[in-house]
Length: 342
Ligand SMILES: Nc1ncnc2c1ncn2[C@@H]1O[C@H](COP(=O)(O)OP(=O)(O)OP(=O)(O)O)[C@@H](O)[C@H]1O
Image 1 (cartoon, rainbow, N blue to C red):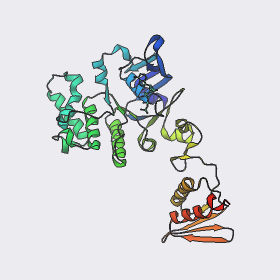
Image 2 (tube, rainbow, N blue to C red):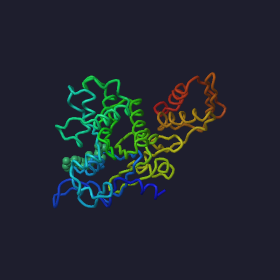
Image 3 (cartoon, protein in one colour):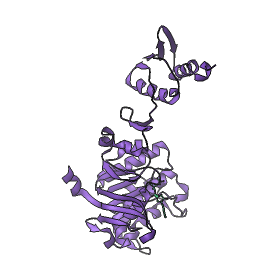
Image 4 (tube, helix red, strand yellow):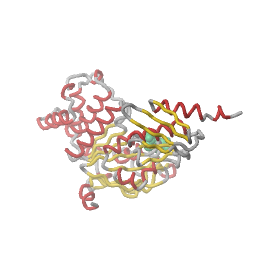
């Protein structure tokens, strides 16, 4: 497996120290970063606000020099490339809103050819083919003639990805590409990036805070945490060995492997639940959310479906409800500390 990854590597960081300023005024943001980015896979960078994800991207793009260590792009030192040569190998999609409402979708995608044609270059047959291929791969043909001021945020994000594809670089980097999008668009964009990485053999590197969608789509995670090196691995391995919890500052928030979600760890006992598996999960989540601070005696919850019937059993007492919220409301009102206080 290590041979497979090494053979596909397009970008490598070695003992990298990143940050701002230089000399005595240098301010390091992260240190001791080692990574390799593989072609044909979707890699997600995750980490808390301010840990240095955007700084790492800017350094990889050659916009700022590393404070120490080295970056290799296609086995050559990044510093040996001109900015234009980097642009032929790395395309970037940033979070900033795109201006230029008068440009059509087609014209914006065509801008991806600038590293090959120069600003004033006209599009050759070869350039036009690359633009058409990018438009087709991102399924935006139906909006190609529209001005970008008239398309939605989700469509614009696909157009920006098409522009990056038209650049025909080995690496595509995206900084929070789904930040302003609704849930369906967030999933769709990440699935599109996964497909493009695999089908077009691109190395796609995405900064995201969307842990659950990243788990569903990424091949590799890079976890960044304050004061510690970058940790990489497959999302599934990281969940199973607990490394995913490096994302959280303390033990109050942990990734629940069974639920597949981040949950607050309340130290509390829970009723014994006799229910189908999907009911158990939502009863547990609702219990944690609503009853975390309540002192509820040992009890059992029994669930029957079709029609829904939830039974709370505590000693000889038994109460029935036709919804989970009905049961939760009952437990809240019965065991409220306010009610029990003198
Ligand atoms: N131009 C700058 N000069 C000096 N320090 C900066 C500059 N830009 C960012 N920083 C600092 O570098 C650190 C890392 O910032 P960065 O934007 O890389 O974090 P991030 O992980 O991308 O955060 P977020 O998830 O909030 O986008 C922060 O402490 C920030 O204040």
